[in-house]
Amino acid sequence: AQSVAQPEDQVNVAEGNPLTVKCTYSVSGNPYLFWYVQYPNRGLQFLLKYITGDNLVKGSYGFEAEFNKSQTSFHLKKPSALVSDSALYFCAVRDSGNTPLVFGKGTRLSVIA
Amino acid sequence: GAGVSQSPSNKVTEKGKDVELRCDPISGHTALYWYRQSLGQGLEFLIYFQGNSAPDKSGLPSDRFSAERTGGSVSTLTIQRTQQEDSAVYLCASSSTGAGANVLTFGAGSRLTVL
Image (cartoon, rainbow over all chains, first blue to last red):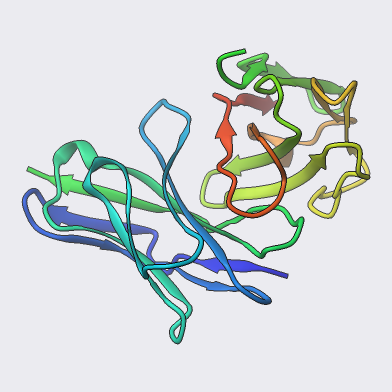
């Protein structure tokens, strides 16, 4: 069965600095990888996904993520953090079959002005 | 509809009572999911419906939990004899198909508090 690990419960970064939110996964076969974001008092929103092709995928709000097959990782990155990026971030994975999408426990990002 | 609609948005109940939570997915979406979000527990998969296939119930935490989806559209999650540990936000999501790269659209959730 597929699984996701987000090793950090909380990430703090100063505004303007680069940010990284870590994610590793386990899946049989080729993975489909996703990042979702939950802003305070709002629903979960899709951010970006990796299916195939370039290992670096770009998403909404200037976020990007790098797929690393050898390390089974899919870390979320942004070159310059904004205070408005403060939110709860979830990594998710599924395999290529008809299986449910499995989420990690989430990482709370706090960007400090 | 334009989005995934869930009701009620908030539900407070007493321990031992039954509750029903409703999800109205995006029109035409064949896949529907229920997740539970508890503090510190992330998103816990509960159940997954895909078209006319038998649902994947592998995430349901106990036999007090059940869900159905009528006519391939609206879904109801039922929790019988609620316990305090059932307190959480229950999220519903739908997608155009169940497999592969399809993005889930989430509802705003139903916050359940069991006293």
